[in-house]
Image 1: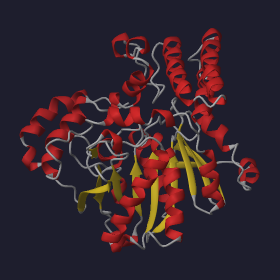
Image 2: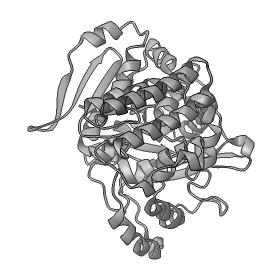
Image 3: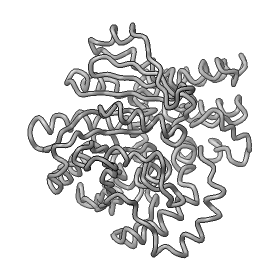
Image 4: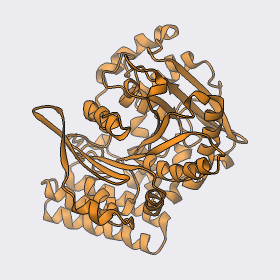
Length: 438
């Protein structure tokens, strides 16, 4: 994960001058959509800022963050692909150079999105999908200039699970003409498509890179097997609790490996999450959502950015409802959506999977495992193909990829869970390839 010590020392200065927070060079818009009674979803759009092409000649990309409960308008925007970084300086590898970018704080309650009643929180990907279709219908109707440009859904982590379901429903909505847009495909980055395949491969992956000894491998595998047994019984709540236990076993045996980049070890006991003290759901939330709502990002979003946007209700705090988002979605955590990916492929929707080599929480071995479970007729041919190297400089192999028909897979080297933050140039190259600009 990125170190923010320097940024934290600068943020008080930024906050004092919050009235002069810069806009990017790109044209920007933002607003709320009330997707249901009491459920308000926030979005933030950057028009493409390309030196030679008008935005209408470039694709529109919607970015969905994970968690669930992590803010795309905050994390994805300022720490990964937006035009400005967390110091509010131009990002050299911003995706706005090659596409218009639509960030959405999704599900409702995430980031600047909010609900006015506990009953309005989503509980599964079906709820999330229904809300997103309301937002997209409103967005494309109000901005007809985007109805004909290719529209892609890119995602990260749990956002990939949401992106697959949203993509399938959007495809059907376009076919029925209830939404007018040029839907071009989904890209699933380090995505929680098949949680069990991730958990079951943690041990073998860590052992293969000398981060577990044989005894540790055995302990992790035993913990993962318990998750599988609960999963096989259909007891998803228990499987989630046991998933948290398995993560604790991994941390104990690896001296605190970072689940988002295995090279960023964190052995400090004070930084580890205690399952015994907090319970499984709170531990999972602290490990996978709360830790990324760092003080510096929180101060930026609730200070200068809030003042810039001017439309955030006084009662709403950026990230203030993220814990509730996570808890209400907990029954959905361990449910796979491999079947939805199969349906996307059967409908001839373009599907891209991309994964960071150094990711653990959604390790590449687990991604390959669920891909092999697809019933897609093109899978045997895809499996038999050789991958090809990709370069961002002549002397640096940055990734491998292969594609067949409407399915592609990118293996991104030297990157963890947050690929654009770790390998910005390669992520930008992948964006151009997926959107047929390279």
